[in-house]
Length: 281
Image (cartoon, rainbow, N blue to C red; front, side, top):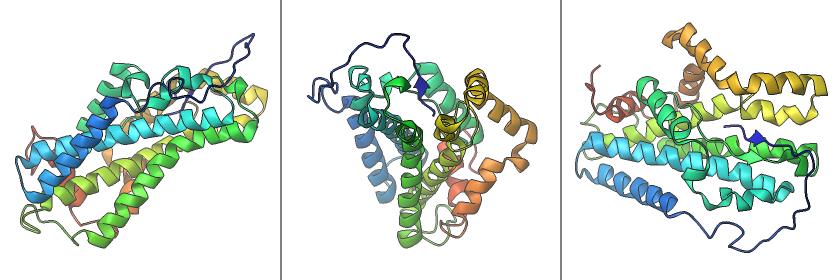
């Protein structure tokens, strides 16, 4: 999600410290646990160990949280490179999900939207003191660096699905030992593509607007700042009003995956992820 801009009236001098302590003490154990859960559940799904529904839920959830952390980390890393070294002291360079926003708004609410609609609500946010950034292009790059993570994730997953995945999935028979794995991987790819599309919309409050904001006039930026707190809510209100059949984000994501991922993969991945429901619902 778009970073939050902070502007101090009288910014003090800040001397950058490139030590590990200044960067927050290394990678967060929570992030490493997410990676371990992602890898372990992926192996279990591919080998056919345990419950498919539990495995898909853990695999997709861990993969999505990993991408969320990397998304926000890249915002912070670009800001650090661009001149705002305060992000190190705020812990943003540790890949710690706890520092990337409010627990409810960052994790609970996005997970709720993911569970009920299969469309991830971007939940994280880092506070960037944009007056410290050295130029408009660096300011723009800070916003672009987050969605770039989702784009890279999408490309990697689509290549894996295209090159090594089955042509179709008739769960759980084709292939019997890995149908849940390829379904989960396809649904995760869909989430990453949808996240990239959503974040790149040029709407205040989203990264797409942040990319162009530094080049807008003061008046447009003032109007955008007033809309930004409600931008994502406006998007989802619009999607709700249009209904599932006219959800342009979901449709664009499905069009991108069409022909590049197993047939039925997204369908089975989504319904396995919703472990409490019926597979045929």
